[in-house]
Structure formats: C-alpha cells, structure tokens
Length: 117
Length: 109
Image 1 (cartoon, rainbow over the protein chains, first blue to last red):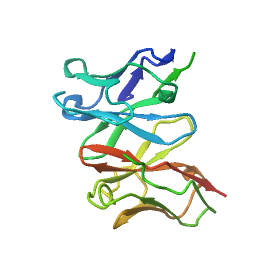
Image 2: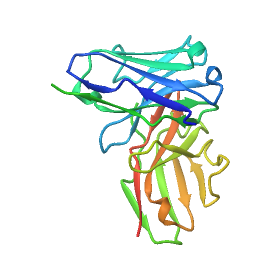
Image 3: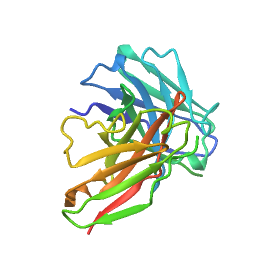
C-alpha cells in the first residue's frame, strides 16, 4: 500500500492555476504535519509549504508566498495545494510528505507540474 | 531561505567508505538537532535514511551513519554497495520553515 498518492499535475500556461491533491492511507494522517516539496527537472529538493495537523497554521517558502495555499481535510485524509499565478520556474515534480518529529516520512511518488505556453 | 550546501558529486569503489557534507548556518544546522538525510534513486521518491542528526529509521542499514559539528552535518556510507548509487539530500528545520541541500550524486565505481 502506497501511503501517499499525489494527483492534479499537468500542463498549465503562465499565469494559470492548478490544484494538487494528496491522498493518504495506512497511517494516522490527522496527527502528521504535512508538507509539499518540489523538484525541478534535474535539480534538488526545495521545500514549498507545510500545514500543521489540524490545519490551523501554515508556512510557505518566500518563492510561493501569496500565490500558493496549502490546506487539508482530515475527514478525507487529504492534503491540497492551490497554486495560482503560476510561473515557468514553478515547473517541477511536486511531492507531498508527512512530517512527524521533524522528519519527512512517508513521501508520495510525486506529480509533475509543467508551466509553459 | 538559502539552500544547504552539499558537494555536487562523490564517488567510491565497492567496499570503501565515503562522506557527504552538508553546510548550513547558525540558524539551521547550527541551531537545531533536526538534520535528516534522504536517498533518492532516479525517478523515485526520496527515502528517509537518517533523522535527528544521527538516528536511523528501522530497516535502514547500519552502513549509514551521520553526525554534526557546528554548522556542518555529514553522512557516511561504509562498505559501499552498487545499490547505494543515488542522489542524497540533507535537510534541516529552521525557525518554522525547512531547507534542503542541493543534493549530492553518489557514484559507485
């Protein structure tokens, strides 16, 4: 069983919007802080955003602040990332990751977002 | 939110040991004992190898060890095996945010 499965990626034009989803199973989702981490083609991992276990608090990397919104629905064991005003530099594989006790585990398999005209 | 600094690549022969460094600042690695390391094979999701500077999750080989001194963390892999060839990323908590290293490509010769 795969603990985290992302969906919602695809091709979008600059300035467009996209909503990513991450479905969790096999662990107590509601107790984990959840994160989005992205990886541009051939590049390293970059932390994007996190949300606490009950959804009352979120943080963002400066590069996405004001454009991206993270949210969760513990009743549906799901994490989301609303991405607006997308730019070419947002092109990446987006991973969702669970974080308990300051370690990223588990990870999803990622979903590719391509921003291009 | 600057990335942690890692060497772009390291290499070693089977059976040898290698060390990958990860340099941060007094606001991240130097301040918190929340350094973790991840292994990533091509096209795959990252895998947790080390957390809290030097702790290994269950199932991770004891050939993997890690430490921290000041603003620099290090990952050592002993008894190199072919399957260790992968990218390795460090990560640290820093004042409500998180930062990753740029990644190090390990080649097993």
